[in-house]
Amino acid sequence: MTTPYNGPATAMLALAQAAGTAPTAKAADAALVATPAPTWLASWTASPQPVWGPDFLFPSNVPAVLRDQTVRQVARISLGGPRLRIVLSNAYGARPLTIGGATVALSGGEAAVVADSLRTVTFDGRTSATIAPGAPLLSDPVELPVAALARVSISLYLPGETPVTTFHWDGRQTGWIVPGNRTAAPDLDAARYPGQSTTARLLLSGIEVEAAPSARAVAVIGDSITDGATASLDADSRWPDFLAARLASHGVAVINAGISGGRLLSDGMGVNALARLERDVLAQPGVRSVVMLLGINDISWPGTAFEPQAARPTLEVLIAGYRQLIERARSRGLRVIGATLTPFAGALPGPPLEDYYHTDKDALRRQVNVWIRDSGAFDAVIDFDAVLCDPADPDRIDPRFDSGDRLHPGDAGNRAMAEAIDVAVLLPGLGARPNPIPETSQER
Image 1 (cartoon, rainbow, N blue to C red):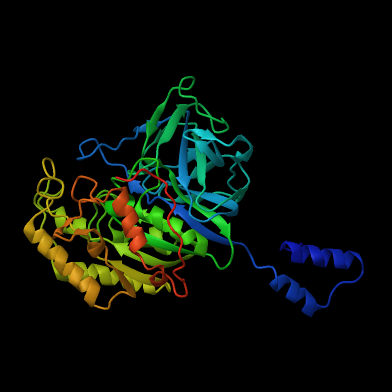
Image 2 (cartoon, rainbow, N blue to C red; image 1 turned 90 degrees about the vertical axis):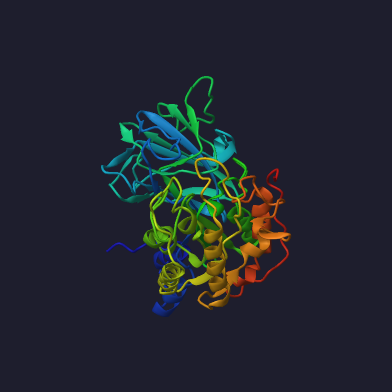
């Protein structure tokens, strides 16, 4: 019979047996218990979305088909560890998808990698793999020590005709698509290997790290304000990014489950939050609490070019949706934090979404916020409305924090949101130690 390997504990038993001094059963049990199994923790995510057609209001910004091409993407993790593994997604694919090769490395800036950190990624011991329709694919562990807040570069080679059906539209990070298998290239020299860039995420949906058993993760499920629609490109300046910088010293990861155009009740630029909660939050390893910032698109899309004939949801229907999310998260033992909807008077002026804001819609937003603050439905509340509003006109976003479209905060607004959070409300026992957010971007 083969003895399962359990690290140093098993090695100790084997040496003792070879020397004829095997420990007692009690001592053997103690040795095995003393070496806990590795804990895998979600350290970065990008929620999968179905790629929309050319007649949609916004372009997809991705090719319809990839063939004999390498896609290289950069992601900043929140917590680090001695090993990592990647998660790929074919969630909206109608046929199997072949990965011909993959590598991971520390990013060397733009499309370059740190050469001596380049590692081959395997799947069940093989360098190639097939992702079934509708399924994710988890890689084998990769021996690559990574620090908290490190930028990691993942390269995927797609040898055959690969329809692009699953992506994350608003990645806020430049990725590169070049001909041939360039997964091992230390740099994707655009002059020698002409290709194209994209700010969408292709296939890559998660990075997990091997972490201490005490490590935990906070998930944030939201829309474009969480996804970072107007955050500076390649700067990791969404509000969950700033929060991750605050929590790294606490041994807590932050994963961003925001989708631009995302909604609570109805599908939009991705499936509704009720449908994706399981995949994007509850199934993520190590998540112990979730922040919910959702609802502004449910209120504002009806009557716009997105949904000209749709009816606006009532307060009661929105509350019922929130309660479903709360109860499902609590059934998994998660702490649930509600976040108030931020001010948006005058948002998105001019075509094609000049009807996004209306005083009646804002009245419903304020009613929702009253319920979030006062209902007691959540374990805690973060009042982002109060953080971002203009003191002279509370229905509008403060000009200091406005990206310019009167809806989305810019980098300074995202930083203000993260800094305003009392981290002690996120997880029981999490102390609010002073830990200023590093200056990572030119804020606007």
